[in-house]
Amino acid sequence: MITRIRKDFPYLTRRVAGRPLVYFDSAATSQKPRQVLEVMFEAAAHRYGNVHRGIHTLSQEATADYEGARGKLAQFIGAKNWREVVFTKNATEAINLVVWGFASHKLKRGDTILITEMEHHSNLVPWLMLKKKKGVRVEYVKITDEGRLDISNLKSLISNLKPKIFAFAHASNVLGTINPVGEIVKLVAKLSPKTITVVDGAQAAPHISVNVARLDCDFYAISAHKMLGPTGIGALYGRRGLLEELRPVFGGGDMIRSVRFNKVEFNELPWRLEPGTPPIIEAIGWGAAIDYLKQIGMAKLKKHEEVLKITFLKHFASLKFNSLRLKLYGPESVKDRTATFSFNLPGLHAHDLASLLDERGIAIRSGHHCAQPLLARLGTKAAARASLYLYNTEEEIDYFFTRLSQVAKLVR
Image 1 (tube, rainbow, N blue to C red):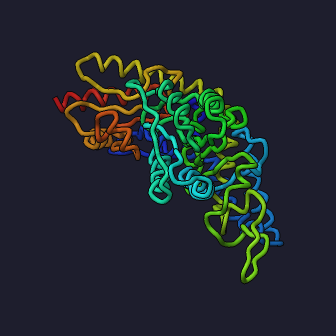
Image 2: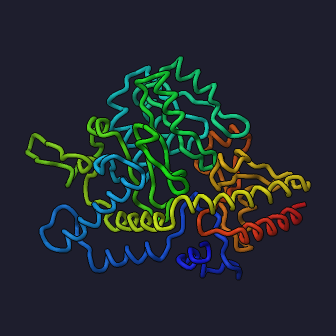
Image 3: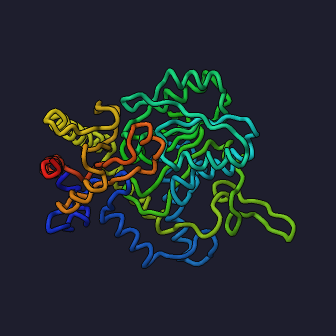
């Protein structure tokens, strides 16, 4: 399977520093298969028009393709109805839509928002902005030293604070930790039935099967470019009733039913939350990415990534006990994490490590990964991160660790 898949990705023809490119930065953004690129080109070249507004053929075709992509996404994440899927610019904007279109009107001074210590800035900064504007409280669920949510602490905070909103990641972009969303939502519903759950699914949806109806969460944010699609488009899933209560954050064209000089009536869902010309080509490309993932099968993708995770962790363990003193952040259990591995090599800054590996044709991430509070909790300001996806191989992992060992010897 992997040999066939790799033929679909044009990036693999690249060489960096004279070597075949090893791309280990999919948690930042995934590469795109030719099937997605070709669909986007065809849409832009031969089927392009503005959506929803034109009677002519191109507009009608573009509208059908655009709304078809919404339907594909709704089915892919297990939404009960396509109207529960609102297109946004990315997962960040999806969360901001909940913050400014829902929470800012529902919460009052002194109300509590609960998030966790492992959140990406996208699911942290907007809540802190709301705190400053509305005088709400923002409290944090602790994580364990292994990088998991502290469930005892979660129970205590939910029981005692009765937060209006609990926002948390399905999977951490630093730790790789996969949180048991379904179990957490049930726990929250039992201890504080009125708490609204907001899930950041940007790092989970590319790797595991997501069914929002079964997870029973209230809102779920997702991004296309993490799952083989283009940048510039994401989505917010919301329960129908809650989306009806969510006020438009921006005004403009296509989100209205009628406008007078002194009055506006908004359109029905989901369009009333999608002002202006939307990312048409990007939505169509996302639909093609979903088709590609479905053709492979999420179960097969998960099985392939299990092999990658096992191989990576075995290599890591052998180096860790071989005097390199590598520090891995997050669970060392394969089933409880994605194939995202953040680590540090003592004596070498993460940026320097990433630069040295780039000279050897390996692309990894370095820095605070838009999670500065989490890295502070981990006792560091920066970390290196290798994140794998369906197009990566065990051979690439072998090569990565060979080069990592060479770099470590140079440092010593």
